[in-house]
Length: 154
Image 1 (cartoon, rainbow, N blue to C red):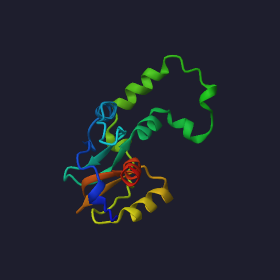
Image 2 (cartoon, helix red, strand yellow):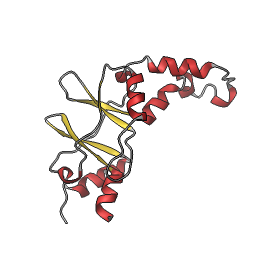
Image 3 (cartoon, rainbow, N blue to C red):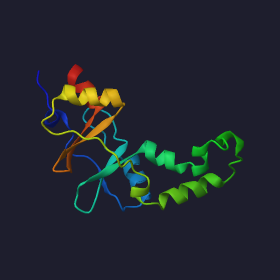
Image 4 (cartoon, rainbow, N blue to C red):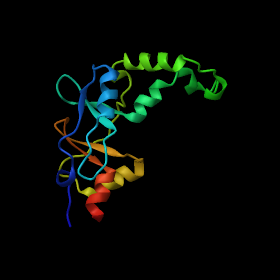
């Protein structure tokens, strides 16, 4: 069985512009499509004005940036804070940011003609859950590790 990225990639996927507000990304992730394999997408491909791959924004990225910056410096822990009604302010501030302030920029991708075992190896070694498939730096699909699993073992 020979399989390439183009054989199993999802070619209908959600994209968002890098200058869109995070509030749009939040809604798109909440209302993400369920793929044929039964899994729901929790990420969006981010494109620039030329429709080129600019990054990826995931549920993890959104939740990471919901947290106040000072938690990243281990000066104080989340348990030491009396949160009160601060959460709503953090949520609103996050919603008003731009996608390019929250997204992951350094995205590893795959080519349509790459063998699935090469892609799987890259994903396993780096703990990637998804890889955009690009052609001339434009996203043409996305491969999810859960879809690889389903395709190989169904």
